[in-house]
Structures are given as structure tokens and as C-alpha cells.
Length: 168
Image (tube, rainbow, N blue to C red):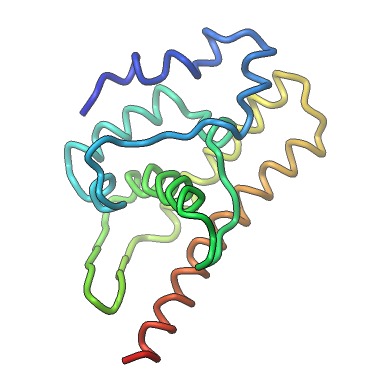
């Protein structure tokens, strides 16, 4: 795993002017070298540790990361952006079961733990937006975007799984 400080230097609210931070709202795309899928982020103990430290150092990812609701037909980059965001959140779940097969992906986790980290991510995004004097409406829109994006990810996965089962 890489160096957290060098990875975050470009998006650290303490290092950016308000104008720079404002311009990066919802625009940052994070990519992980050699990660072939979400499990490479949230299932490996070293990766989980790294991303927990990353979140502790950069709890504002909900403000910066590029997110959009997805469907099965969404552009690949949108799926990657949202998968990465959720993978970072899933690193905080203590108990995860993950499996891949030709029929799809299975994932079990404690929903309350994912909910807790999402509340923190949304709260930190709102905190930074408020410090930059965003309107309450803009903060609420970002909060709703995060929620819609996460909901769409799971709904898309369920629909995709159902479609795969029907083709068998």
C-alpha cells in the first residue's frame, strides 16, 4: 500500500485554498493500482488497514469523490467511481463475506456498520461544504446524491443478479 500523505496532498482541505476546495467538490477520481475489483480493496487485511487510515486522515471523501447513481448500463468509469467509494466504506465493516462465481457476486456485511460510516462520510462532506459557505440546499443535494448513489449501486447489483439467474 502507498503513502497516505502523498496521496492526499492534492485534496487536503488544510492545504487548499477555499477556491481550490470548492472547485474539487465532487470532481476527484481515485484509482487504486493493481486492484482488479472491489474485493482487492475491502477483503485484504493490509488494504483494509490502509483504507481505514486513509479515512481517518481524509474523512472528507464524500465531499471530493466523483459519484453518480448507476444502472447496469452506466459508463464503466461511473461504476468504478462508485465501487471504489463503497469499497472504502466497506473497509469499516468488521464482518464481511464475499464470493464471486459465474452467476454473480455475493456480499454479506452488517448494514448498521455501513450505515454508520456513510453517516460519518456524509456529515464530514457537509461540514466541509458548510465551511466553504455552501448553501444548505447544496449540502442537502450532495447528501442526497451520496444516498441515491449507494442505493443505486445495490439496486443495480440485485437487478444484474436477477438477470443472470434468468439466463441460466
